[in-house]
Image 1 (spheres, chains in turn blue, green):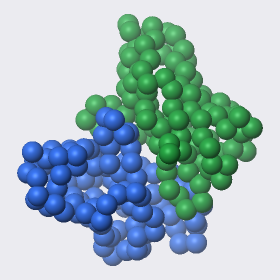
Image 2 (tube, rainbow over the protein chains, first blue to last red):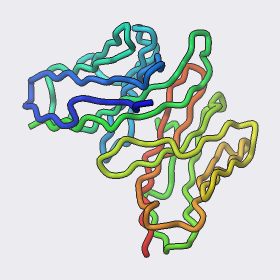
Image 3 (cartoon, helix red, strand yellow):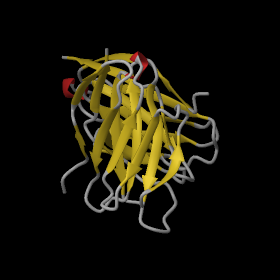
Image 4 (cartoon, rainbow over the protein chains, first blue to last red):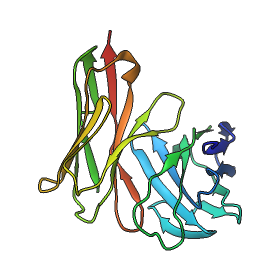
Length: 117
Length: 111
């Protein structure tokens, strides 16, 4: 099976702009989670989507949003970019079959490196 | 509040030695404890994971030790190799499937 793919791999934006990142999960995986990774904060959970619905949300401002499509692909959007948004954004997918609400293994993509100037 | 605390921040080990990374958690509802390995420019890759019904799990040179009463778990890398040089993250998850990660340990194995 192909792994989790993320596009683009690298992105440079300026303050005030907005950005959309894309994630394609492993085939058959229905859950997609997004994380922000920075040297100082480690991996911080942004949100999780399952069957096109946001199930969990981390402690990030409303400028960070996401969505999931019927084919489980997910997008993450950041509006009004700030310098502090520069980070590696990671997407992780997990199988999560319907009714299985227990803990599930997550598989990460390579990430999108966002630089805000 | 950091749900999972990881130490040390960095570790240097001689080739053939044992690398030990420790993590502690607070939430007793956590029931899944994975370790991830991350190389520069790559996403984290699942290395090994344990659930609290066992105290130890071994896969090749990698072993997780789990102490439920102390709310601690650790990763042991036996016969450490230069190719093991990477950043290691512990994590914990429970009902709701939200993962909490440690801050990472940068491991350097010296030839």
